[in-house]
Length: 238
Image 1 (tube, rainbow, N blue to C red):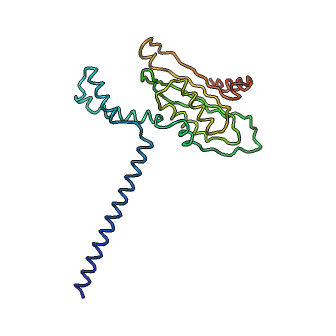
Image 2: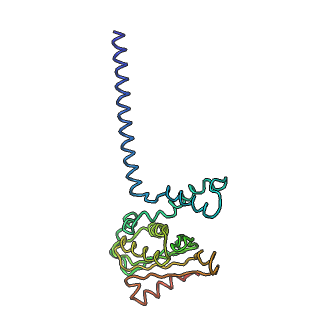
Image 3: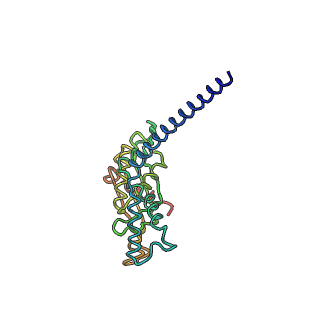
């Protein structure tokens, strides 16, 4: 009886181990498929190609990519590019879908009230020289049409749009387009101030130069009184 019980116990343990192995294999396969899907959808930046090309650039500069200070530089740059160019993985529509967090507007509220978020700090990279655009401050205004957008989402939209190879003018138009998509309002304005290292650290080297761009849509483009109100609010407190 004891021998029979021992055989049954051993058989149970084998069956349990087999089942656990099958479950673990299934879990790994499922996790692997999810990871591949996530990589295909979200990680479109080819970090391996970046690593190889950065190594080639170091060689082209006449340096030794295998010396102590540089041997990990290609990998570090690839990881940095994956982070700072994250916005290149998404279209404007996809960014809009990502941050579409609206709240119903009270029907008693004035539909002409302007929402303005000022001085959102972002950075980006100029597509002409791959040079840093820095000290950038983005201000975004819109007139709600039945829904209001969570304020932090406005900052997240500006931040994600900056994480592309960009022009300052395009940053403004991209943000305006996304704001139109997420708010269902055509009345959007985007103002940006920023410094460009392509003209402060090289070339003409005008270190105090600040570039200002303005993107106006809907009533912000056609209503002089609304424009005046907007610019008064932008300069208030300066």
